[in-house]
Length: 268
Image 1 (cartoon, helix red, strand yellow):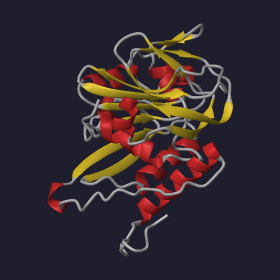
Image 2 (cartoon, rainbow, N blue to C red; image 1 turned 135 degrees about the horizontal axis):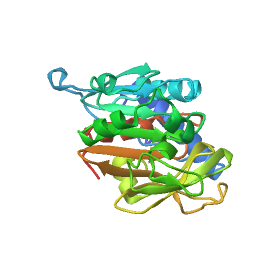
Image 3 (cartoon, one colour; image 1 turned 60 degrees about the vertical axis):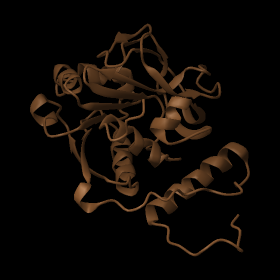
């Protein structure tokens, strides 16, 4: 609560207000009480002559979830990062010529990772070349399964990140614990409540860095990686099992991941 003797009246933009509400909701879901306070950082004003545009392509083919695609758009619309302008488009086809116009590719939740791997409209070689040459890749749920080295007992993936996946069968909210590396990249800390729809439980087999782990055993894989960052050639990769773009949304997490992939955020 504020100290009314020292607090001055100021302004809070709409995006910051939505973020504050999200923090309050997540805290209540985890602790069954309201927080004593929510801190909103003053990011200052960006120089309009020094704005970095980040161009995001969101895959929206027949095997992508419309809710997930719209959730990504929503997060990009409401969260503002100082000095960064996010623009986005969707495509039902992923090719080298299409990717050439973008900085980050988002492969959202969908039917399954295997569907993405077998989809003739998604060029695996184009994605690998795009990331290897400096592009960013964000894979959520199905997009994470597809970009892993493989899913144990099922199929091999594109191998964009040095992780393997355990297939998970759980739908509902759960808790994830943010790691120290995750604090730097995601701008979050502690335990977060997040939506989960059969997303991957991951473990590293190389140099990948854990950003968050499953904090409870609802998936059957407590302590396994929920979100991970890695590099592939000159590009960056983040794979995320749960859905920060779906209710209860964590918009900041989505936008921070995309910003890191676009090399706007340099922490690793």
